Every structure is written in C-alpha cells, then in structure tokens.
Length: 478
Image 1 (spheres, rainbow, N blue to C red):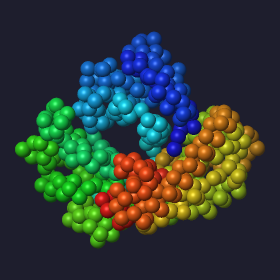
Image 2 (spheres, rainbow, N blue to C red):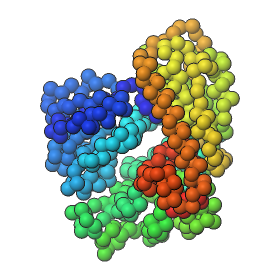
Image 3 (cartoon, helix red, strand yellow):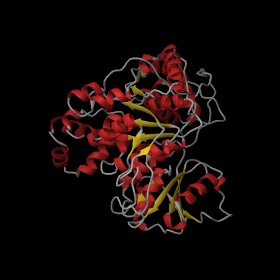
Image 4 (cartoon, rainbow, N blue to C red):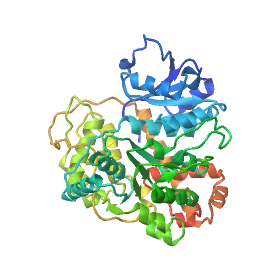
C-alpha cells in the first residue's frame, strides 16, 4: 500500500547517488534529490507528503547520533542508514535500536526500493488510535484490558489484516509495564541466520563482523513488552531457545558463556493454526502452551460489521482532502457492508484509498469500489472466532450531499502504472502459489520458478503481507 501523497526521497549529499540508483528510483516513480542534511538552511517543513531520508553511516559518529538527529527533525521521516561492507555491525545496531531500515551498498535494486517505498508508506501514515464500535469489538476490548492488566503471556490468533498488533499495543498500554518499551518483532522477516542474534543479542567476536557486544530484542524490551508477530514462522532451533527464555526467565547471547536474567513480558500473534503446525512438526507443542497462557481469538472484519462504516470513514479522512468532507452514495455503502472482506481491515483501507483516487474530487459511488478479488482465489487462511478492530473513532459522516470535495490531483500515468503493477503482482503471485502447492521443498520450488531461494523467500513474505496464505506443509522449512 502506498500513501496517496507523492513520496520525497531525500539523499544525504555526503554520499553521492549514482545514475544507476536514480534510474531504479525513477522506474518506481520516485525522484531523489540530494540535500545538506546538517545545513540550518534546509527547510524540512516545506516538504509535503511522506519523506524518506537516506543518510550515510559516515555522516554520524554513531547510531545514537543518527537517531538523535531523526528525533530533532520538525517532521516525521522514514530514515534509512546506508552502509558499506565494512559497516555491517553498525547496520545491525541500527536495526536493533529502532532505525527504520538499513541499505547496504550494492542492494540498490528495483525490488529492494519497491519494498522500502511500501514499508515507508505504511510507517509514515500509521495512526495510533482505534475503532471499537461493533459489540463484538467492544467485548474484545474489555478482554484485552483484563489480560493486559495481568502479567500472563498471551497468544492472539486471527487472520491477516485483522489488527493483532493494534491489540498487542493496547494490552501493553493497559499493563503495569506501560511506561516501559513496546518492541514489535515480525518473526517472518527475521533472516534465519540472524534470528537468534537479533532476538537474544551477541557477544563481541561471536561471528565475523561482530566487533562489539550487542543486545537483542529481549533486552531492548526489558521492563516492557516484546510482541512476537507471526511467531509460527520462527525456525525450530530458535523456538527451542525461545522456550528456554520463557521457562528460565533468562537468555544467553550468541557467543556468550554467561546467561542474563530478563524481565520481559511476551505477547505473540499468528495467522496460522499452530495446533496443525504442531501435528506436522513445524511448531513445538511445549512452546505453544508457554505462549498461550491466555488465548485471544481475533475475528475477521465480516464478523464485526458495525465496525465497517466507522473504519471506512476514518480511512476517507486519512486519505481524502482534510479541508473537505467526502460524500458516499447509498449504493457504495451497501457494497461496503455486503462484501465479505477476506483481507479484513487492511483490505478495507486499500479499497477506500483506491476509491479516493478514482473519485477525483467527486462523490464516491459503487463504481469507485474495487476489491482485491483475484488475490482471494488463493487458499483461505484458517477461520478464527472472536473479536478485533483498528484505527480511530471519528463520527461516521457518510452523507449523500451533492457537494464535490476537492482532492489531490493524480496523473493518469501514475494511476495506470499502479494498475499495471497490481495486475503483474497478481499474476506472479498466482504462479508462485501454484508452484508451492506441488513442490516438495523450497529449493525445488525456486528451481521450477527459475529464481534463487532468497528471492523466493522475499516473494513469499510479500505475498503474506498482501494477505495470501501459503500452505506451509508443502514447503518443508518454509
């Protein structure tokens, strides 16, 4: 999902951008421009729309200095640290300390920047408020409040896009640990070779490039909450170490002979049926019971229909012109209420964002609503019962006025490019999904597709981000 405003790519001029990277970015419709980031004459507030700031590791004495610079800016930016092959340790430290992304020289590919643009758009438009209108959602909120106030570990089950991280943040806010850190970790995005180091930390000399001791996510969440999203994606060896951390309340960093005590609460989430994963041997039963002291089932959006219109109204205000109210026809309202929403809140957000673009300043009608139907031809995820929501609670304002609000202008070429890209992605996902159904291993699937295993992992992660379920029993270690 991309923000409706054009994205600004601001490049630290101490690390010149070469023509190849400019070409890659322009292919994605992004136009980078160099700036003197430390110049007092730089007018950050004049930038409209999301800002992605690419800085050089050479421009700052430390990661802490880079983070301090980010906090000092008068606007919110998505900051990327660019490192060379001799600065990988600094890159790992930057990720652990919360910098938005790290880019290694030589990784300036179209696919890499496409992912960066997507992640930046999601991060920069994130809103910290919620909607609990449906009775099911209100019951869920009460449950999360009670669970949050306790110290028990909790496991949230629910389909992709239903808002599990929102609930985890609420549980943290309701807990005695609310003044401590909330550290979310997407387990599906952890590289297998670095997962243990990222979670538990490492000692100096533990591996090539480990030039100093480094703390992991567990210690970062000390006296707070560690949220393990997509916990079912963790490799079995890491699951064993996670189990020990939960049992013994201590961790052992990679390469360290001494364990360290921890005071961290664990909240976890998954869109998989972990009991089925236990039966096929891809998830540990003892870890499942440790994580699920309390289980919270998060319902799909179609199970809480009274949230649909308030959420839709929130997204209209989020993506529409803030100076004008947007009218929606009764036919469009009916279409929103009658749709099944297999992609849940995330899909609703995409549908409203597209409608805002297509309406071009006119009232939204049923013809402006396009659903992600091709993607939903893939195998469905396990169904879950119980509740969930997202976003803020503005008063719904779906009137049928004849006034035509003003919107930002979009060139037809931009809209066409987005449509073509969506169509190409859907076709690619369809081919990958069919191949994964028949292949016995990840290596075999990658060979059939003519791509590397690493590329396949990236594409599978991208498919899961879009709400496409991948049948793991067909993929071995995947």
